[in-house]
Length: 117
Image 1 (cartoon, one colour):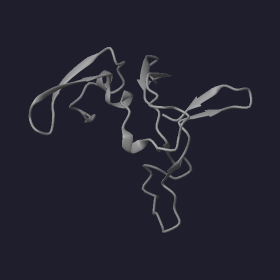
Image 2 (cartoon, helix red, strand yellow):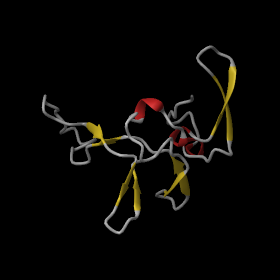
Image 3 (cartoon, one colour):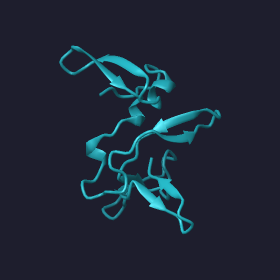
Image 4 (cartoon, helix red, strand yellow):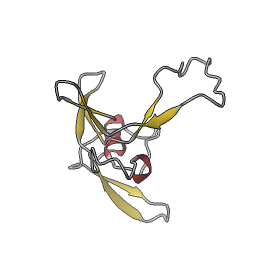
């Protein structure tokens, strides 16, 4: 599995659909192919085994800031959006929650799906 590295990978390779093949060298140095961007891969480490809401869900479309569409896989963990990320004011203590478990797919009262991307 490849990892996105700013300045070394094109952004489209990060959120491409599974129809797009990417050739890379694996950890043993041999060529391998990954279908879809890195954000559109199901990483088992980020999916809770007891979370049956998504079942290896990928290809969830999301509108990007430039108006294009990116495709993402859902995960079972989410960052705490109430922390002051990237401000220099983050001083975690023993009771600070940086990430927590969340279902891959939640539903609004109206029944609409909300994906944990």
